[in-house]
Amino acid sequence: MPYLRMVGITKYFPGVVANDNITFEVEEGEIHALVGENGAGKSTLMKILYGMEKPDAGQIYLNDQPVNIPNPQTAIQLGIDMVHQHFQLVPSLTVAENVTLGYEPHHGPFIDRRLTDQRVRELSERFGLLVEPDAVVADLSVGEQQRVEILKLLYRDARLLILDEPSAVLTPQEVEDLFEVLRRLVETGRTAIFITHKLREVMAICDRATVLRRGRVVGTVRVDETEPETIARMMVGRELAPIRRGEPLREPPKPRLIVRDLHVSDDRGLPAVQGISFRVGAGEIVGLAGVEGNGQRELIEALVGLRKPEGGDVVLGDEVVTEAANRKRRDLGMAIIPEDRNRQGLSAESTLTENLVSTRYHKPPFSRWGFLRVGEMRAFALRAIRQFDIRVRGPNVRVRTLSGGNAQKVVVARELAEVPQLLIAAQPTRGLDVGATQFVHSELLHLRAAGTAILLISADLDELLALADRFLVIFEGRLVGELMPIEATRERLGILMTGRSEQGR
Image (cartoon, rainbow, N blue to C red; front, side):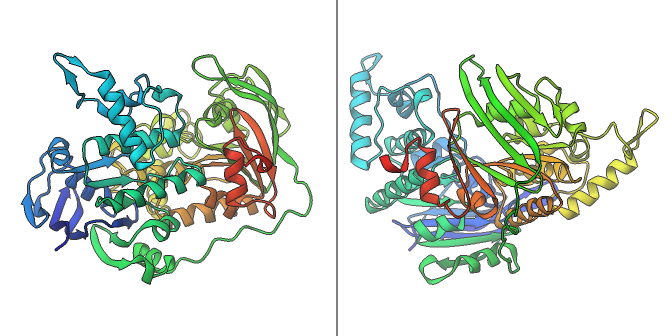
């Protein structure tokens, strides 16, 4: 009998059947992948399991016993816990304080800090999650913060772990460390549900995979008996042709973006970008690799006009734009896919149409003689919905109601609607399924062929290796390496991303 059974799970939202009579089974001691397109119903199903949503129909069984899970606290009591894609940590607290938050051991009326540190250290050593209990979370790397998240689950004695896109911000080496931890956990009898868009990871770590499409289960397969292409086909319902980088550039392209000795500070006034110089040419994709938090955000904001540099120059085409406003840069042909769609890419309370025209509403055909042309805006939105397969009820829905993947499609559709001179694309496929990712990659290559200069910032090395003509690696605000495609491998890029030289590995 399976350890977990979700039988006949159905969940309605206005105008949408998110889960349509889903039956999902997980065996004890396995790592089970849950995959599917954006809007396939994965997140809704896991929110139901974790008590964040209530199903309209269906029943959950643990160890063949029916259970009701009205909230996350009940899920935790039942041994179900979740590592969210965006970490739920308090940066100013220590590792031990984060791990035990809400479940602290007490000595009389006071928290027993010595016992807290001792328990966290024992868990850390037992499962190979090596972090110091008294370290402040804000000082930890992203990989170390993820270990803290997993320690939280183990401290609460989770038996079933839900991992939502756990490798999204990790280096290749950190991903391997995570996989080793997961293997150790299942050896102790724990069970994991692994949500990911990366089929390489499904094949590397999972025992079985259940595929959802449009709210229904397409099938469950044993990973060691199938191919990634088969899973991809199940996810999207069609064959996916491989994306191939364009022909190598035969001569150095004309620079469209020149960055010279750029210095940028972070929000605290500390150096975040330290003397960076590089060029991006017409018809060239330059990939910038690096673990998140090494100056990428500040660099992007300086390039697009949202953060004033402390020194250096930014040149777009033939014009110095170091001090120019964002609209001026857009008028010169810059397009931007920001890394944080919620903070910088979208207005959650505005409609899909309003978001799609937000960078060009003041231009024809969307305005004339100072008046907005609502019909042209709606027609543009309907074309974008069809072209980019944005799963919505219509162009007037509020963006806050969209799934993360569909929200990202709105940003991509807006920025790729015209052929820009320069595209700064930061994590352009984050949260997108394999079909949508392939579409975006194809669009980037079309822009490259049309002469657009593209700076591609991504934590996904497979994405960079598939698309980039050159590779830059950033670490602690400095460029620490430049590689050509013939030199670049996951291992070499991963080593540089950690700040080590290949000789010192």
